[in-house]
Image (cartoon, rainbow, N blue to C red):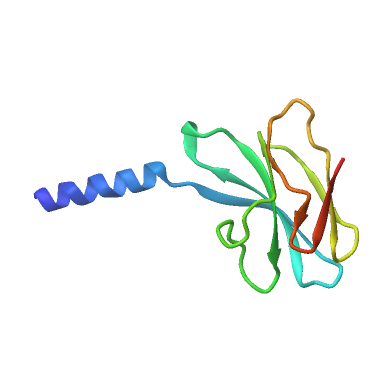
Length: 115
């Protein structure tokens, strides 16, 4: 009985603090080897909505741990992204009043511009 109660508490605590990654769009590069992935992390009521972007290989499923975000903004927004060639990305439609948490200019050999 005690073991069952402990198992239920552990299950509840694990699910309560867990976040889920929700992919909103994926835009393949011109050569098809990588994608810009627009996603959000949903963590329940304790963490606000967010919009993030990452560069990920197209030959495997997306993981925000393996391909961390280079761009992150508060709120759930329809941020636009496009490739300007295999080594250049543009992120646009960024709401002016939202807080940008991360906005890197380069991811490896890929340049990022913001509009």
